Length: 358
Ligand SMILES: Cc1cc2nc3c(=O)[nH]c(=O)nc-3n(C[C@H](O)[C@H](O)[C@H](O)COP(=O)(O)O)c2cc1C
Image (cartoon, rainbow, N blue to C red; front, side):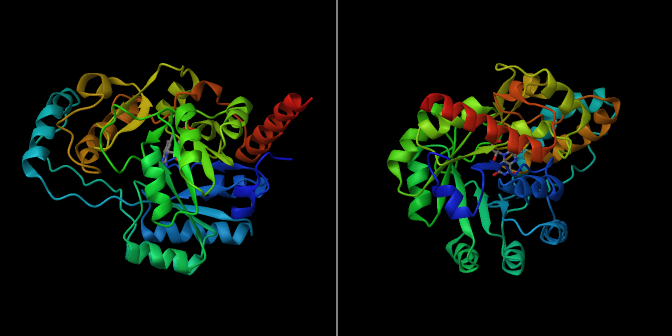
């Protein structure tokens, strides 16, 4: 029924739809729903403690025998850079004063943790069918242990060169993440954002550059995007922003509100929330400090100094100081349960594919 079965067969899926692991809004509730519907649920662990990761995986394994994708960031923890941290706090000081916060109070540390020994132990314990990484791959010793569990390994490439690197380092399939994508860019071979290709240009060039199957991501939110991805040579799609509209998504109220009215030109790439570029709906802090700032400390440290601003303003319903991650196709979001969305997207893509065959 699908023009390309390689990802279906490799990952044991009925439908070629991967729900993007989205650190923050996604927990086991959505992952179970998507995997049960025949797609692949993705559990994001970047903001979870090892204990929380173990709990969420336990819930998943208890509730379904379908496959799961467990996702980790694999950045290197940066060196402390006191001068940069101080300059960043100074830049944010006017906002602290406006909100009645003490700029001299020590900033909390960002909770984003890279894949490490402890997380690897959890992978060995729960043996997820799929493990995916963002920002490249972990050290070979850890990666070998993941592969020894039998897990299929995926990672995001934002250029064809990154895709080739990932294939050479052992990825079983590549997620080609176009510039339209919401959330963090998986970019890892360079930090030059100026030449990042969009999904339409990226996917066929990645398909030509590697032998492993390719999963298209970025700006795909309806049947047209799914079918286009297949035509470009992808074997499946990974969809993020469209799943933020599901009741299972734990999206903060100000974020949900702006998602509902988002249009194609409402997002930008910004580094002010974490230190790494990510796509989100433009808000006050992005406008006034970024969207890209040379002062932002290295990933993930930039987020620490923003946390008190968010904590103070969010209860008032303000989204001024929080990340509002979204891709360029947020407008196609539909508010329906994740299982229904997965099945509906697949049915609509099938119908569109067969209309071409007639
Ligand atoms: C709210 C949000 C959080 C995200 N968090 C992660 C993450 O934790 N790990 C990851 O690999 N990708 C993450 N991404 C990126 C997605 O994997 C994917 O590349 C992107 O959602 C695809 O583009 P789309 O949002 O236009 O569908 C996130 C995206 C969003 C929108």
